[in-house]
Length: 428
Image 1: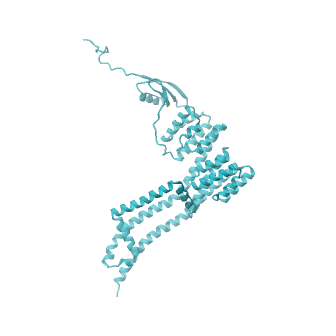
Image 2: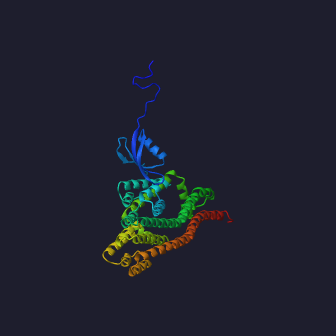
Image 3: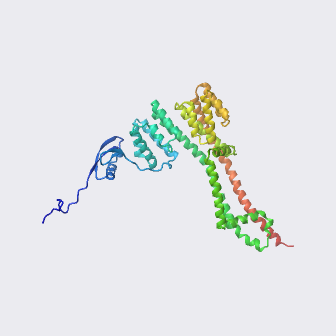
């Protein structure tokens, strides 16, 4: 009896898998770029083999031998925080400072990265550089992660041969921006917490505690029309026990919130809101110092990097975070381009503190504007620290007064009818 099948293959043997040869470009653990060939049955197996060899893959050929860029999984980039970008940029600055070439430095970030989304970004940046693009151009393809200011700093570094220094400047700028955000957040955390707590307290008092007193008033035959505050609280209490009333209230509040959001999404609405914010007591002062600190930080970073003053002002306008300030700085940039001094243009904007204008004027007269802007940056960073402490110390008693007022209104609404009941059962 023959041991061969009709196809000529021995019985009991598995058919051999068809193997393909894939050309690849990858980076080893020590940061060296290598090219080679791996044999595998399919593309996924080839990728797994290279991963087992601890090689970071950048290009992998199709089975027909055509070399194409490896498609890394696309991950939404909106979740990358400014702090993550700042830390990653600082790491890149340190690696470049150690003398490692650019692509190898970026590869080191990929290998050591702890943030998956940021790692994905650096992988795409490496792919763009391997295609022949500059780093600044590769970064500009990710505007949600790297701002135009960031890309321009890198571009200046590429043009002047000071890439390491400019990436260090970008890292410092981002770190200062993160610190500004942290300070503002710390100043607003307490009042927001108190506001939420106060809202929950009001709901609990009106919804659960107030109904316990209604039977007492009804049994005593009280005419609650003599106590308008109590009537108002009872109406609120009934509202919280009606599903349809609560739904209607939620729809009204949601509609108002949606309308406010749509209004703030327009340029005109954002400008109106910005002007209103600057005019508010306490919070307006914090907002103005915050924006001034951000403007000083950005403008100082760009002028120190050698960016021309009009361009630096325009980039600062885009990074200011306020349409009101952006409009003012755009006009300032136009005035500087016409030959006016920066101090004159800032004064004409009628939005910046007099001290800032005076210090800029001194810097222009002495021919040391970048140095003076760096001092202004330090000063307003300290000013922001002091303002945050002052605002925090002022907000605390104000929030306590608000909470006390809410509780006081509830107590008055309950106590007054009770006193009326006591008066009715007293001796005639």
